[in-house]
Amino acid sequence: MSRVFALVDCNNFYASCEKLFRPDLADRPVVVLSNNDGCVVARSKEAKALGIKMGVPVFQIKELLEKNNVVAFSSNYALYADMSARVMRTLEEMAPAVEVYSIDEAFLDLSGVATAINLTDFGHQIRQRIQQWIGIAVCVGIAPTKTLAKLANHGAKSWSKTGGVVDLTSKERQRKLMALLPVNEVWGIGGRLTKRLEEAGIHSVLDLADAPTKLIRQQFSVVVERTVMELNGESCIELEDIPPTKKEIVSSRAFGERVTELAVMHEAVSEYVHRACKKLRQERCQAKRISVFLRTSPFSDHQLDPYYSNSRSAELSYPSDDTRDFLHVANKLLNAIWKDGFRYAKAGVMLSDFYAHGVCQQDLFATSDTVRGNSALMGLIDQINQQMPNSLYFASKSAKQSWGMKRELLSPAFTTNWNGLPKAR
DNA sequence: TCTGGGGTCCTAGGACCC
DNA sequence: TCTGGGGTCCTAGGACCC
Picture 1 (cartoon, chains in turn brown, yellow, cyan):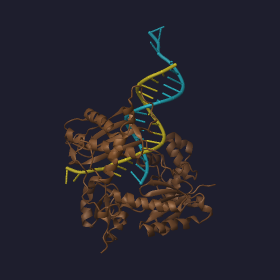
Picture 2 (tube, rainbow, N blue to C red; picture 1 turned 90 degrees about the vertical axis):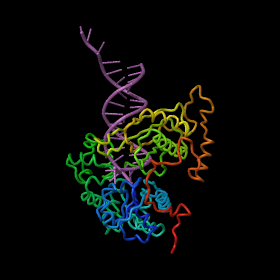
Picture 3 (cartoon, protein in one colour; picture 1 turned 60 degrees about the vertical axis):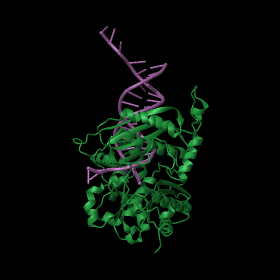
Picture 4 (cartoon, rainbow, N blue to C red; picture 1 turned 45 degrees about the vertical axis):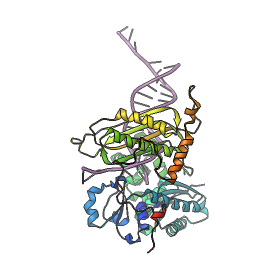
């Protein structure tokens, strides 16, 4: 049976979520900012029309924002995650298999559906239902491979006359669209590869599709070779409807203010250890390796503000999910890489080398307590913090955080907190 | 003055072993 | 004087994604 994938992608997702609860902003340009209100991470269509680019630092476009009355929001992940869950639930009701690919995108497996219903019609049904039930606009791309479905979605987004749905099951339509698009629009082809491909005379997506796979494998990699096969309608990347277990967990933040003192850095790193370990327990995993990293700003003038970046990792003698085990090691790692005299902009912690509970080979001298960790205690702490956020923490983490992030333009938690419920007037 | 956060996969090269 | 070769495992770094 030939495969059919759909990619459903929400339009301007974060900006759409903000607008949904602020009907007064319907036609206004809206942007959503990254943590620390640092750069633009989402733009409404009015903001895109002003030429505001994805990822630009806010301070560079301050005047443009003011002149055009652009409304800016700090990112409100609680809101976006909740809206995302509603969209995904709706998709799961409509399609036999769904892979949640990111907060605003999902792949659907429509392989069985194609015989029963016209695919373009089905795409429009999806759009209508999500618009009506949740209030978010989506576009739908349909094709025999995930890479082509991505491209079809890009087409649906770019040309309004498609009505937001592009079915690319026919070879002719595939080639027609590929001839129109530059190679950097392909899923998996980023900036570096685009440059190298162009040097090799490959400019359009069609150029890439028609390139000999042997040559591509030689000069680039198996990854690019797979992409070429997918562009030719040969499905190599399967739908992952069951999320694979994580292989690493990262917790890191850029600081609201530069950090120059070791004691303050210890506070921050402790906080990241807490967060990472909490995620680890939610994954029902144990980890053996932890690494700590820090860096100054890569953007500043290094004559005035010298650059320094370092990381170091270590292994516990047994896998654990107990915050205290990792705090102890993280403190030592931080001391080893810390250097006085720098203005640190960011730090973080990474957990890796995961084991399911009880799987790891125990060493001969492990006592039952070290092996068990103290998961009952950690579970209790997670539970209490769930009900009363941040009410319990270890002494290494301070309650007052001068290095914490800036979120000055935050919208209310409209859907996840009673105090944030929108008021009808 | 001010530039996000969290992931995955692949590959090259070093360490180690026989 | 002359100092191997091949396999595996691990890690760091580079590339990509949203």
